[in-house]
Length: 144
Image (cartoon, rainbow, N blue to C red; front, side, top):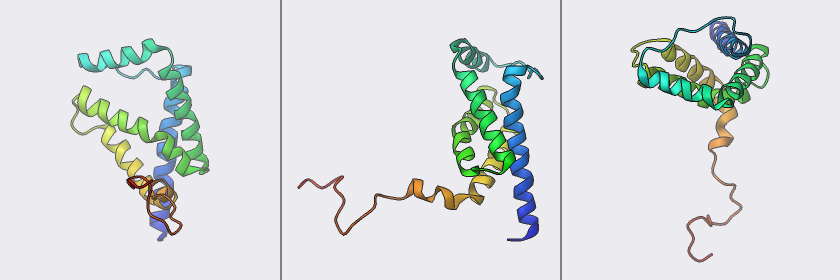
């Protein structure tokens, strides 16, 4: 790997970690108030999440933990796994509810995919089939 590639991954990992750590801390400390959503669907979605009293604090803790792991360069595949669903939700929220064209959701998704691709070897066991020991699969075997 070239030094440019390694530095690019380092910068992207640090930026994504800082974004998610700040977002999680912001939920509890109210440092910055994000702009209110314009679309009615987006307002309903965020009101529902806030009214639950459970989802937003849990997501915020996940953001802080995953962000700090990314910043510390520790357990990066685990941090990326924690952020997989929120990244998809952020992308879907902005693309569908807010109906934005190009925005932060595209950047977050692209950075996430680059980092996941960089650590793809760590995710290989998640997609591996069952271990075989000289026998056929029992999943669709009618004889068993």
